Length: 230
Image (tube, rainbow, N blue to C red; front, side):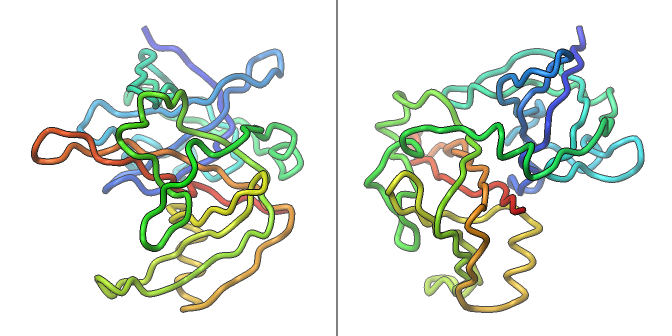
């Protein structure tokens, strides 16, 4: 049975060769519901361009309100927001929200999951595999302070990387940006640091860990799936 749900899109980011689309449900009565991440039945669970194309031929943008068809609730470990997509139902744009609308529905967790674990180029940007069992969600929209886009060259592979440095609840984070619009914009500007609005909102996603060849689970990484500014 297909269930039609309406969400405000708060992320349409890169996921492998597809996209990760996610948002918060808006009920018919105007109430704000839970996070929803539509996923495909394919390995990697990403959403293809065809699957997310709206009736007007465009793809969902952050802050678009869209109606989507879902087959069933399909949580996977800490990614409790996952719902299996019905690819036969074309998505429809219902309306578009404003920055103020998004600011009114931010989450307020004490921290962005666990602290004290960092990659070589990030800060507080990963959760060790041994701690994943204690994680109960994988998506948040938060208001951050001192947001700065950092464009640098990875010394190991020579590729340009875009990260977002920010403070949240007194803790520093430096996370990889998978928001394609902001990644592309700042990658073109070249190496440097670019300050953002003090009213920046950020959608942070805890990505699904990959399985190592020996069958063990790798660490999971926190990424900036969307940057929202006034």
